[in-house]
Length: 107
Length: 121
Image 1 (cartoon, each protein chain N blue to C red):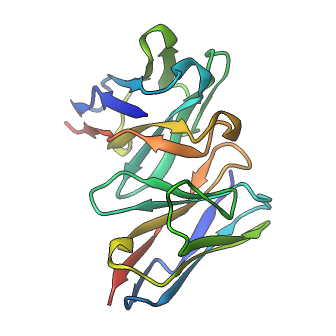
Image 2 (image 1 turned 90 degrees about the vertical axis):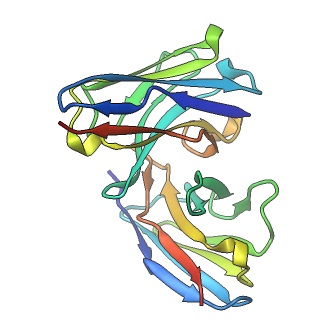
């Protein structure tokens, strides 16, 4: 099984700040990496698929990059509605696996 | 696209539950369907998926041999039969659909609201 890690586990930033989350895969997963947003009390929502492709309707302040085992997710200009936990997920091999999440809060 | 889960509840260790997911708004028989669970201790965890024509299924090691996924395309429904339930199976169980026909089974573009399973004596 491929183990996913994320850092930091939580962060607090100001409105307008650039926020970056990193995700590391235990093995090379090529570009089989997705990012999800889960707002408090809500269902996870797909934001980015295949490392860097924004899902329809997702604001362009969200972006992703990386390949192999190292990936990053960036919010360019944090907004109040971005308060959420963000998860990376690999699907290069079974079972699909999620990272432990990064909780983003407003300072 | 709408996915609506049901069937969760309180069950004793060793007991069984059958979760259902009714889908609408898309051609159900075209898509892989998955079950994903979330708990404070285990986070988001893949449980199982089933191919459009039920010819292929896959399970997490933690549930293999205890859980069975199935679907009824005529009823736009997917199911998860959960037997020999343990305390660590307690979670919110989500039904999920792949993002698109081309994206395969494991990019979860649509999620239901979830159904809570509690395992306690």
